[in-house]
Length: 212
Image (cartoon, rainbow, N blue to C red; front, side, top):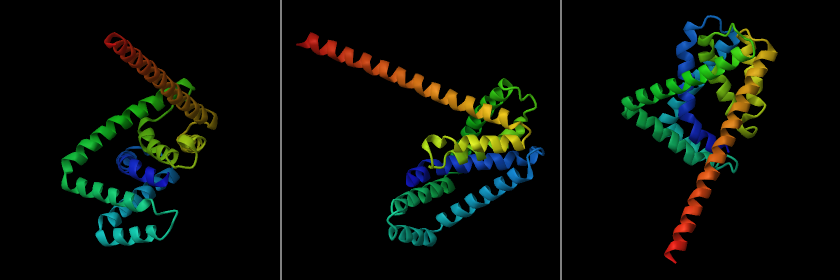
């Protein structure tokens, strides 16, 4: 689970933290604790990427992982992360395009969260602060501790949004609405997939019957 998260979330995590860092100066209402967390996470990611980008530290970490049964699966994922960093360094246009898409996705996420904030009665929500705190919340929710970050992400919502002016009840309400919407969308997607698959099977069965 850890290796899968490292492989699938490293690049989006860097993009989200970069966006939070970009909007931080424009959101003076963000609490000092949240601001410090953004800076610490950003510093950690930059340091980690710098270490992984160098061949000797990467080889040393891979050897360390190979000696530990629990961490052995991280060695090939570490190589993939390094390859991604090298690709980004060689193709800056790809990085710009990726950041633009991440910004678009993050903007939609902010719109979604702000609409939930208005739905629960938090009319004083700051959009600029959401651009800063949401990446932290999503990163915490991505930790492979519970299925889909269930419970952990909600705690992060309550902590970060309460620090931005929401009441704990409003913050929890936003988290619950977003969780319910994600489950409803997943259920709708599953039903559509089942319907399409069943239709394809009926079509194939009818075609085989005609051929026979």
